[in-house]
Length: 136
Image (tube, rainbow, N blue to C red; front, side, top):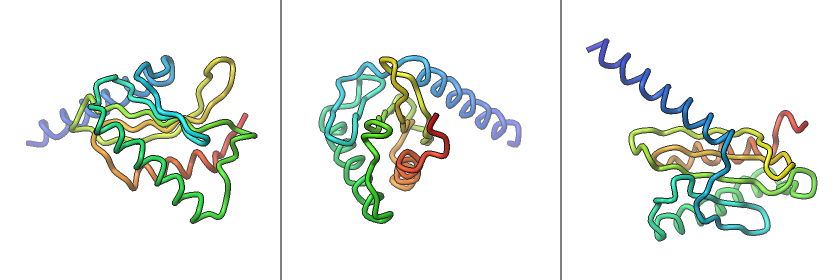
């Protein structure tokens, strides 16, 4: 039993690491949604349109709530738009993370979400994107 749990944990850890490496090195290729604050992408290109529409709405409304809670702006002029990338290729996974990546010669803020949706993780990582610790 313990061996199976350790194996599953290792599998999830490896999946997360591979996903992070892929996100850092290759920008998403799915059809993106873009507004004045966010660029939202389907990394796998296989999220059904209605589900993607719901994810777009959730990401935008969550960012709005984060900005209202902290009484702040998304700092688009200083840091550019926030990129949110969804990957639902592994429904058993549940990771969210924030990092910087180079795109078209610019450093961009990226929030990645792997697996099933967790609104708390998304809110936490969007907060990290609004208030990044390291900006250079």
